[in-house]
Amino acid sequence: MIHVTVWNEYRHELTDEKVREVYPNGIHEQLKSFLQEEFVVKTATLDEAEHGLTEEVLDETDVLIWWGHMAHDEVADEIVNRVHERILQGMGLIVLHSGHMSKIFMKLMGTSCDLKWREADETCRIWNVNPSHPITDGIGEYIELEKEEMYGEHFDIPAPDELIFINWYQGGEVFRGGCTYKRGNGKIFYFQPGHETYPSYYHKKVQRVIKNAVQWATPSQSTYPSYGHHQPLETLENWKG
Image 1 (cartoon, rainbow, N blue to C red):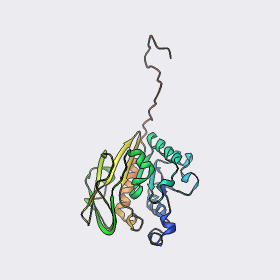
Image 2: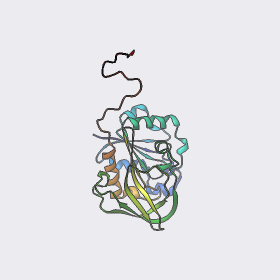
Image 3: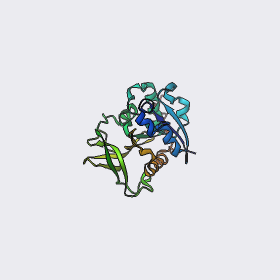
Image 4: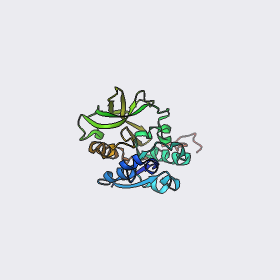
């Protein structure tokens, strides 16, 4: 079985009634509710000890899903470095919506990861531009969301290894709303939908994308490479070991 950990800072839901109406048990619990149909799922939140991301939890995690927004700076650098190391070793990472400004995503990208944004109850059409990719399996040509926060270009990220979705918004902007990367042995997927006051994570096609992404990002059986001082494979006359 694939083991998934859903991480959510879990702040909006506790302080904003409008958000609580949409996600009464937290965004993490809504994500868990559909992911557990196919995977073994646990959750972790910012205010838990070690943000819920202990060595033991990460060692048991095949794919980590990350949602954050208002408290990126409160994530301890020690935990970010711990997660980063596990990704390089092969753990998958799915970054959702405003997680684009999380410490872990910025560390992996090496750029500001900034963008344009607007909250105006706009229609969002998420175009599938990579229809043969496993992440888009069963999605069709596009996903249409009645309301979603606008994210617009320029999105300050490195050129994606693979571009999966391009979003169009009612106000006219477009956005690279689904992108994959590889860092070390780990696979990373960024997916735009998920503003806290809109019910995007109840949409069946959004759920299908996230489930597909978990399957795609699950670690392979490849051995993590060794680095540093290396013994020769053949006999060397002048090798002093």
